[in-house]
Length: 397
Image (cartoon, rainbow, N blue to C red):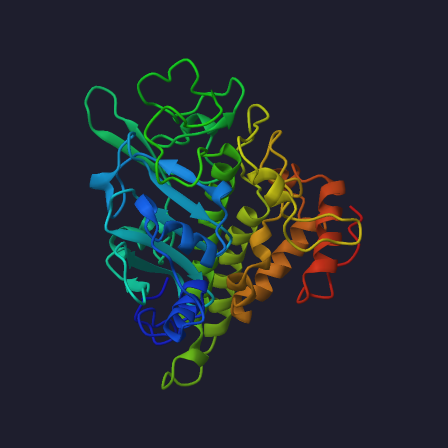
């Protein structure tokens, strides 16, 4: 997968292009500012500056984080996110933690000291890579989302990564989950006093002191969206890194490619494209056992986002009856990270997308994408994705 120090990657030194780096420049120039307020510190001001909505708040009480010693079910860590950045806040902790998906570098980590300063600034962090550049993040700087559950027979905890392929019965250990999930069991809300209402929790009010928190929700719709987005982001980073690491043209002094070398590279990129596209199109998504309903404005806001075609359809629309999205093609196809993919891997990704969406590939695992939905996805993409290849045409089979 290439090294972070590969000349074509240069994770530590490559010029950055992400929303936090942009905000830092504005803070230094005085065209933006942050305000320190009460127990939240810079939280509210940072959320506004990074355009992170409060209805995206997720609450996790497992201690698997940089400031985990200060996290508990009485003082959960709050996470906020959009398509490009995630922010973590722990009440009483010394730092705000921020992770931004950079167009080229992958996920870049920052902290902001929670003490009043004349010109606060986000500091780039590398210590986060001890966990966030592990196999759980596909070996690249990325996001990880764990479900933490007690092991049988002792007090040790068991952790497992979550994404949209994870059955609901194995999700959300160590998290608060607000909203309704029907009769479908999950590991969320395992705190004293909630055994009878774990799957229909309207809010976290009354469960702990909420002073300083921006919301009383940890919305199930936001949790489902976040778990999809984390792994999709990591796949895009991995695809970009592998393409750059394998490209002889990006390694000065390596000479002309050896005979057959580019054939091998294309074969490698084809395999990566298959993996990216299967996840992008939700081929292995675990179905929702019951319709779920959130407890905040997240679903409505998310469903109104993004570019729309002439029929008003958007890839941001959520379903939540038996799956996450109404049209099963990830909205991260519009992300700067997708747009910045090297041609060496973007071209086979588009080719594979068309092969699946057109019906050219007839494997049984793709039958869950019916003709009507595949046709709708292609029609939306043709009107909203400027760099979509011209061979994306009408889907007829």
